[in-house]
Image (cartoon, rainbow, N blue to C red; front, side, top):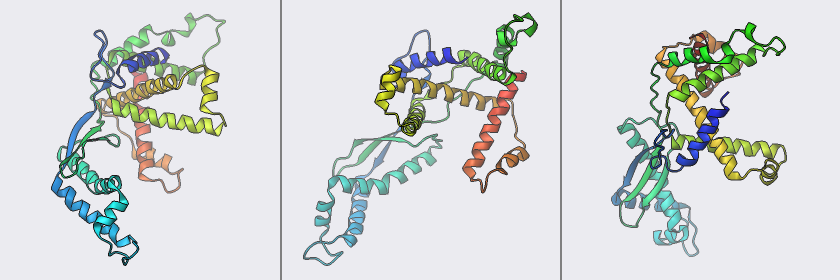
Length: 305
């Protein structure tokens, strides 16, 4: 049921995935939102101080002919490490802390690891970095229940089975339920615009492609052989996975918005019952179970509207 919607996402991604803010259709808004972007600046003073510290730390382990261990001049230690390595060591000490401080001070809520690119790293000057993060998109549900009701009135999946051709085989109940869920989600997403941050789509696409690569490896199929068999290019595969990632993320945030709008609650006993089947469940597993159960309740709610 979501095939047509998936095709739309794929078409829009071709235009917006890499340049989300610059290209917009006049008759259809982009579904890719800009990332939250900010600049981090490391002062020349703190860079110099940290550089001295990391070189002194490396000095203690360094061995040079003619010098006792830990006694070689810092200049020799720096020359052996190389400028790039020294810069990386300084960044390891400073950049993460600067990022965490900025996030806390500005009350930002990143959903993924940041994308960081250097803007200026000149010796003896301040270093600046462009940082991009993805935050939770706003979802304006509007009168989504009306959309659900209209879908049920017009879609053949909800038509009286007596009006159907008696010769036609009846769809299994669970399959029909899944088809109805897809139809309702499709109906809502056609009218409720949910813009997903580009970085989130990118990360989810990379994750899915990485998993796809493992699947091919497990089947002892090379990527080239697979592409030749299906008659597609790597760009085609990437585009398809990006479209699927966008759609999956839209569904996830849509269901989350419904959970909040309807104040759907989750009895602790339901979580406990599932986790009882897992030996020493972690907090991540607990949160995953909670999120999954809440989404399922949101889906059940759509079916009863």
